[in-house]
Image (tube, rainbow, N blue to C red; front, top):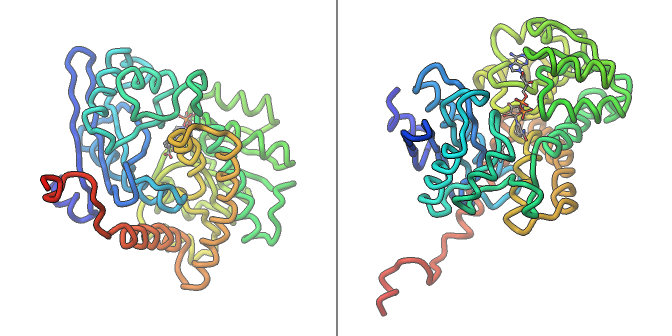
Length: 364
Ligand SMILES: NC(=O)c1ccc[n+]([C@@H]2O[C@H](COP(=O)([O-])OP(=O)(O)OC[C@H]3O[C@@H](n4cnc5c(N)ncnc54)[C@H](O)[C@@H]3O)[C@@H](O)[C@H]2O)c1
Ligand SMILES: CC(C)C[C@H](N)C(=O)O
């Protein structure tokens, strides 16, 4: 992989490699764009097969956060960290404290939070070394685990997508096929069950499936069969790139609305599902509830204010479908336009000179 070439093509600002032998920390912080403000994005811990795979994941996810934060109306740029290792075996206190010190060294250019493989307890350890971390314990007056709030955002976004596809946003009687019933999807299933939706679930972890089957009467299917279910809505809530050449021909659902990041394997897959008439709620918009919630900590956390803002994901998804129809483009393009236009507007309005920071005039 030619890293600088890749960074230049997609406008990345900075890639930071962090190593600490004592704790075994190997982390990559990717900062994509800080036009709107400091880069905020979670830390993923994953057993990557190769270093290249880890770098690629950090870069892709960081860019996604630039778009997510911009579309959510936050004054934050986009970044992400990946820690190479098995979250079940390789974690220790020193690792997260060492990582916190690396974040502190960036002096506020990057703020972290949870992602796949990291928890509130990990954020609390990072917080021992830096204030540039969110999603820390409620005991600190903070927002804690973002997953339930992300789930609420996915739920309201799914309703907006259902309205677009079926003419009504009621999910009562609708069948939803949920891929991965982890932290976000369990709470999502709770909302869906409460509204009277029928649930089909698949997960590589049998305990997670059992939990959803017992609590919500969900029907279990094999992980390979989740795409082809006779469902109204497909909710990808596991990992990325699951809308691809292999899975698209299997899909029967009219709507795709789920929490996973980077759902489209490639932009061409967004074009294909658009042509098929599938209503796709763009991933980084529908799953922005978590980042909206943790970002609220930067103002002194207020749960009510955060939830009100998360509820507007419904309107945001509606707006994206409007742009999609107005401009004759797939919904993922409409979402990108929304984000890019905001970054361009804010960048312009912030371009006037201000007498602060280091400048030749400071000596006068
Ligand atoms: N947690 C948040 O607040 C948040 C916010 C935004 C986006 N997301 C995204 O949502 C997704 C889920 O996040 P989470 O926090 O619930 O993670 P999680 O790890 O708790 O849940 C993911 C679940 O998917 C299952 N899974 C993994 N591979 C699978 C496969 N091939 N088939 C079926 N199941 C599989 C796992 O066993 C797990 O139960 C991730 O893509 C994450 O990046 C999460
Ligand atoms: C800041 C975090 C809550 C980020 C979250 N993991 C996401 O992908 O949006």
